[in-house]
Length: 564
Image (cartoon, rainbow, N blue to C red; front, side, top):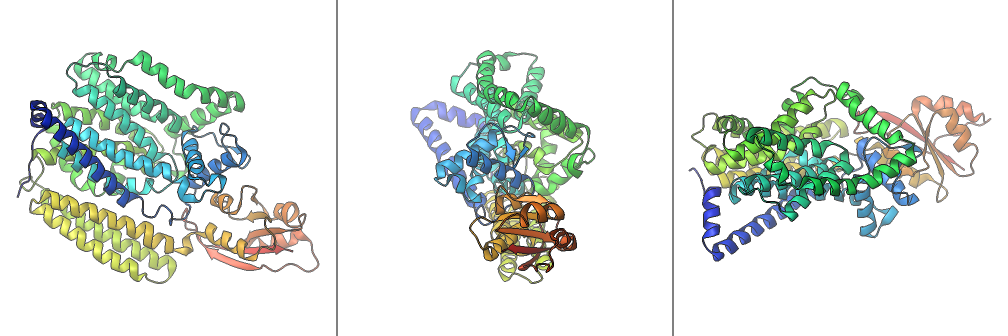
């Protein structure tokens, strides 16, 4: 059966008809937001405490924030003694604030540093609903919010302590305010709406530089060109808004510029941002079109319906709601496709635009069983569930050397949910199909982040090294050096003063010159380390730790030497 519902215009007329109808509409909005809040937490929070620290970006962010808490310096961003000037300070402040508000302070566990990412992901879901309800109907917004919450990429970013989930939330806040201005026929100035827009722009700059202004600015530019008018821009109170945005941003920019002697700007703008535009940094170069190809997997299960929705959007491109979504997603996506460096998270701010587009198409009846290609598209809900569920189990077997019965049971259950979701969607039961799709995505997140990844001990070498040091050390705070393994997670796990160096330096500066020391040495550097000690009786390692790091998956054997 085809489940269609009221259009946005019908809802608006009903809402305007009587005060009681208005109260009913507001109550429905609150219920939908509460439902999405609970669904988002249920999908995105599990695993935030059990997933080990990942390299390299998350470890760099977490350790730099940890050092802010240790030193009390919340201006100058550093990883050990190295300036950390690739990104602005916003996410570090948010992580540090989470640590302080939690009561843990500098002793905060890893999950506390991840709270801003979780909050950003949940806000993304709620703003997605708001945009869908603004451009279409409450049901369209609900569909969009559910799809956004269940997307694999937002599920990953919600559990990782770095910038992208909160950055996306600032983009969504700006786009929501812009959508509210866009649908206002009078184009009146609204203080709460405009304050949200310009605050989101300022916070976005503090989190990741120009990305939020770029995305929202391109949306505004395309809409203004289409309308051949600057009325939409003027309705945002740009003079007051820009002044407020600068008030949020400039104090730290001036401070860091002074403290760093201008090095922050040369590194953040000259090296990091412009370098990524011109060349593929950190082995992440890729040709145009790669974002689109990768998004078919990272945006699953939303990506199952996205192609059909995009085709419908092209035909309906003159409709104001569809035009807004095109102005949001298309120009920015093309910019990121043109940038030489490509990572899946770069296009995350456009995922909610596709979610809203699908929500509008489902709600209007433009997508459904009568649509050509529908059955083939929705079949990929089941295909994705099977591939990812059993693929995770196969990877676990390869790297751990044994199968996880919990993982296998989970994969079977998820496969059943995926098959049920595809079946419901094929037969036109949209609400049941989306419910089963969300459950399928949630099951995959539980399988990966709660069951299999935390249990895959062979891929968390830094954690194993920290456990080995704790078990073998003979004093409370030994001097620790690491040779042949340079991942930043070792610094957070072993302490800010951990020396990452070569074998001669580890022998001379750490092991030989301190009464209580631990040297962690890669097996292929053992001879150089022992030779540098120049002792008549070479020491033997207290223990050996073998394993891999999730970044690169290279198998390493690390020897732990303990003194005394």
